[in-house]
Length: 394
Image (cartoon, rainbow, N blue to C red):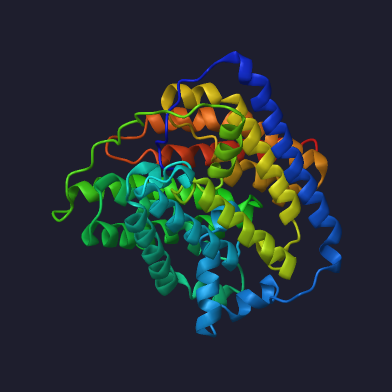
């Protein structure tokens, strides 16, 4: 949700076939891997504790608590894996160092090329720890999942991207995330989503934009906050949008939610998720066994979104094609199961409708509010419409 990435001017039609073939190959490979994982799931060992046992132990020992917190860093993608969280952070750091050293293999500039990755990630992690300190008691008290992850992908990193580096900025963002986003998410999930039988993602993403509408006006009034940064400039040498660009862009979209937007970080995330599944298929994705279907839906919706809105990437420099990856597509699978109709319908409807709505809402965010608020608002609307609509035919 960084709001800016490298621009491109290549809209030449002769390479259109190669882009679609690359997208088809990527989606096909991801679907094939998902089918293979689903087939072998029953024969895999249980080296790691299952999700239920992991949650039960989360506040009993320091190692399990740290593993739980790392898992929170991947909850936006519905993966919930400590190894995936470690891979995400390691990949993000690698991409940041490579970007600073101007390595060609650095991929899409992490954190939109602002150089703020250490500060925004530090603020996000601190907000996550403060959320657990203030609200973690709800997990053992209820014995159920609680949305403690929301601070990691919302107000804290967005405040840093808006106001720049510094301890005061990072600490302010972290405190606002723990004090606003997390309790609003807890309230919405417990008092609205659960009683009405709606996906919990509706409560979590709604909490993100509601808290942003409160936090950013408050930041402008705080005397220790600096002036907002100027928007980052577009890249001087835009990349060519060929087949490789499609594959890289699809991968990078998996880490747009935590404001990374980089394929190296995404490879770390996905590798950690797959290793967790192989060590115990009942550990990632809340132990429901739906990870293969989730990955298939996410890759399909990401690929279709990037291909459909490639020209918007060329025109605007950045486009929210990541939105259905962390909202509509996985919400449909979690609600209706791993059927082919659920995977395909959630992926297609999310890819078609979510990105343009997110772009429209982001451009109309209130003054001083980071555009990520528009992205998560679109997640709320699209999920609230698509999931019940598919319930009429599923």
